Length: 327
Image 1 (spheres, rainbow, N blue to C red):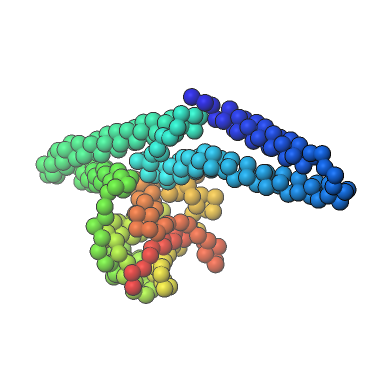
Image 2: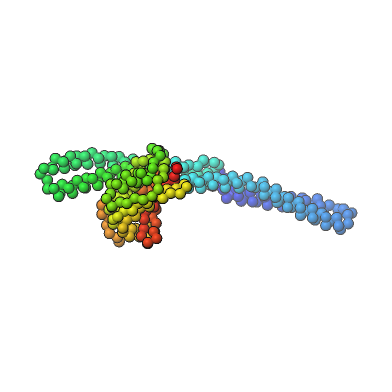
């Protein structure tokens, strides 16, 4: 195996030797004994310079395929690394040659394969564990139902609330695991975003909706969950009323949700979308599962959109979801 730096080094040395040899030969031919006047030697000197330039161009053109072959393989490796970083765990690069670039490509493929196996095993463990939790939850719920006659009403209500929150957490973990699967297809339909938001806002007494209708293509169950998680987040952590506004332009529908409180501080705009994020030095999270906003961003991105926080004109913050329009 010829190492990469040796290939560059030998190519450079070979080019220089070829250039030097050709230059000596041309100079020798042009300086053969002749009875020509001095003007003729000046003409030969100009020809010598032209020949040297042509030799330099020829050598440069001959060296280009070698350099381009190496750079092309590096570009393919770069694209594979970017794809892996973007979440495509199946990204691989062809192993070509027997130099350092080939070894690097092989190492990348092995590392990507191990990462893919670890992520799949983690997702399977999380999904299976969440699924298995439903059985004891069902038993606990049945036990609470049987104890309704004798149990203290306040304690029973607390148990029912705990069970409901745990059941919701299991459901969101299962949904997060499904959304993390890159190859998982959506149940795509045409959805009127304004009508869907109206149905979800009707579940909250303090939610107010305004906006224009817009049809998008997406999974109605996931889009409903997106809106419900944002409304639930406002109900749990904000102050009434909750405002929902839907705007549109020629290509994009924008959903903006805010409440009567100050909202999220700008320093936390990105962090609030992390799973189970707890603000440092802030109040402890009350209620919720810690996955709601993370799912909002996942669902938006699975529909070729995005979710973010933004500062409004009055200084308060809002949640903004953008989704591509169909019509």
